[in-house]
Length: 589
Image 1 (cartoon, rainbow, N blue to C red):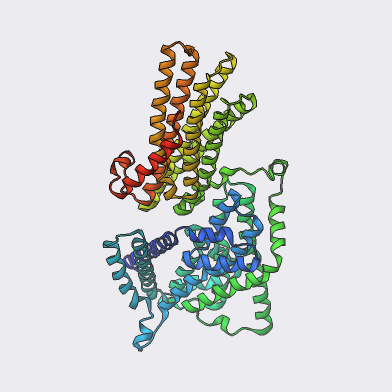
Image 2: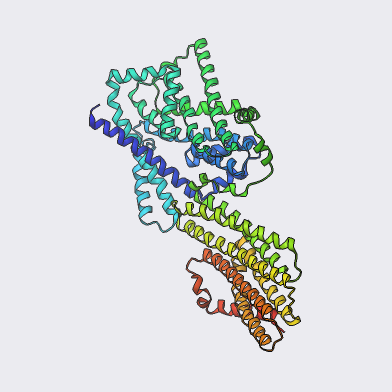
């Protein structure tokens, strides 16, 4: 092979790996996080888990990606180790689909229809369709479909380029002599494991082996150890992913390793024992791309059926490798809700956004409870409730810190337009929840001050605060419920109530000033009432923000600052009806 042949080989390999990466990324984006949600939910039965793992991996074309997802699920507490084992087994079967697709390169026929099944025949058509979709992509779905088609075309072109580059090596005795040495089982396993560990993909390493098979130097006997080694090497990705994760996630990575190692050892022992007894003739026959795909599938199906009855045994082996310590025992049952913000999920933004949303919903409920507790202090003061508000406000700060940092990381990923909008709205929403907590803490300070100075509102002032409190409670209920249930219809009822609260705030202050002028209200008490009114009004503003964010998700043309003024015609009439209804409900007598 001259320098140009070597360049063709390296270039073909680069295109092959790039195409596989683009195609896998497009498939995962097109799924929109649905595959991850399936993995999360449908794992109650081991056989179902195997089928699910095989299906998901066949779609995303990567057992490593599936296993890394599982490491993230176990690390975040979404899934138990026992649930993950069946999916790991299925993932090994699902990953064989790629090798069968690549085996199509070996098709030789004069029949037009059969020839069209050859990738070199239909890949250019897919590439043309893909580039047309990419250039006219009006939606994320079209763009992702284009990525899949282009990725597959590049993958197949790279495969063909590699095969063409190594074909001349069939006549080079030195090269074929090196390949013959791989028939040594130990050397074959080590070479297969090393190659896969380097490129982090068993599908890709099997594809490279299929490309090399055109030299005719490989026999069935020589590729079996290499393929088994490739299955062991693919465990490196999950092992690396588990670095820095909790012990449950590390056990998941070890289960993947043990499954492939035990399966490989048993398969090799059975194969060589039977070969000694029956002298397999096929072992010395030249193997092609289809033969390699067949061996890859047979081994993974064999290993799955062999170890499926021993799921508990694999789990125990993982626990023996990484035992439960005292710290883990005391932590059992104490859920760390922030574990769902696992960095492994960043590779699948739609799923990561969903995890953020689940935490944001909890944060919204906490913000509402914190505010309601703080407002209740003016009716009946309680040191315990005041302390509770302080603790909950600290938790809201923690929510904002953890979610904010994770969302910032997520924002740096390759997001679709809708995903980017979702991240932006979540970041704004958690800021509003945190500010509601701050206002609740302000109310606690006001209530503390009133308690220490034994200040009591007059009958009229008390009534005004009660009406104001009822209105703020209503807007809190509406905005938080709308956020939790993603209810844009309910969200549309928030803004007219916020305007009523604005008017209510002005009226409360106006009446308070009159009492001050007439000397009916002490200065200190007057300042307290003003502070309460200001905090109430700002809480209503934050509730209004949350409602507009939801409406923006439904219609991204809506501008938060121009929402009310943009209402016209029937929407404005509906707005006015709601405004009048709230005005009547929360009027000061």
